[in-house]
Length: 176
Image (tube, rainbow, N blue to C red; front, side):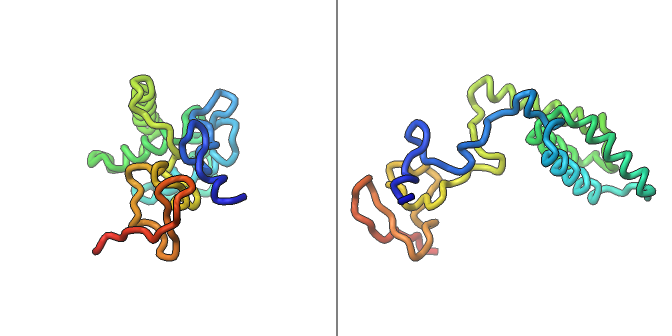
């Protein structure tokens, strides 16, 4: 595989690893059917628990509590769960670990916002963790670069080219 294999993906857009991921979950691909998603959800809840005082539970009680949360939140997309957990944690009124009902309320709000944005066309299909760049993005001709890509972000020992088939040159660097 050469550099030219990285030049374009679907519709002329730069190919990324994340571009092969599904844009939304289908019912058969829901959280309830994905063991790794349940592990991620468990980690989200454990991280949230570190922010709030909670009584000491026996190991069995804690296990049952997590099972109940997993069961009650399994219908939601992980993006919505993450947005709901973040919204709860950032709310100054949130003094204690949330009940399932409190989390569901925040998750439903996040889901509603995401679906409304998608219907209005304001949502952009992108990876879960923000705008990613293709592997070796600097090897793409500059006419395929996204507006937020900068020559000053190119690794120091790499060159760029302005157009397909163009000559390689050293990137312009911003002075700090």
